[in-house]
Image: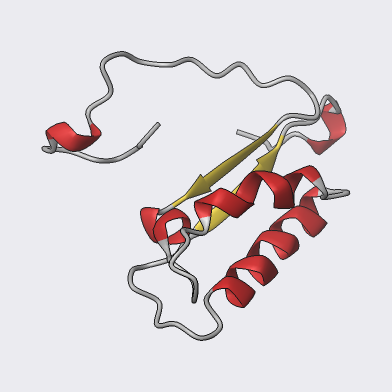
Length: 100
């Protein structure tokens, strides 16, 4: 679901979605430049993300795997847009929660 997009019917979702993470769930937040970037073969990077994350062992290896794969995907092409990505992993450990 697109976040932070205003004034365009193209991105308006017909309803709101609710996400209730469970321990072990992950959430990828990224700009469209990350998902839409095309590689040498013309394919969008978004098609590779699920496979990359399915093979990750931890949050740290997940974000590194995503970034390394993105760099390989775009090695011989010009980056067309801004690229930002964050990977959140939800835990059930009170000692690892952020203080508000």
